[in-house]
Length: 150
Image 1 (cartoon, rainbow, N blue to C red):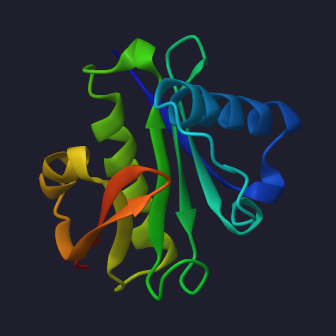
Image 2: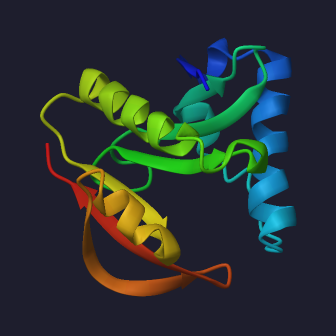
């Protein structure tokens, strides 16, 4: 399966793209994970957004890059999500590889921090992230902060 990734600042996203991003995030984070929370946390307008599309142009994965100082001291990758329709196809890994490369372009020489769901700790570890600190609960889901050194 082929995926393409575009990275755009929030102000360059079309209304349709914002809709599609929010729809995919809500489908997974709120409905599938049965976790009612406020996804629109105010950070999106400051972020770069990755749009992963399949060969037909359908949004199948998305993530955001949060600038340093907004959530953490370091730049961060967050709201990482792939459609249930493309799980186990490499879409999530391809998305993260693209996100890491984009962070390196935007913020050269800086470590990257994530707040990972604990069940994905091994996945993120395979991409060079290491756990820091203690596990914590976020909206009823176990998380752990992880950092990928530059």
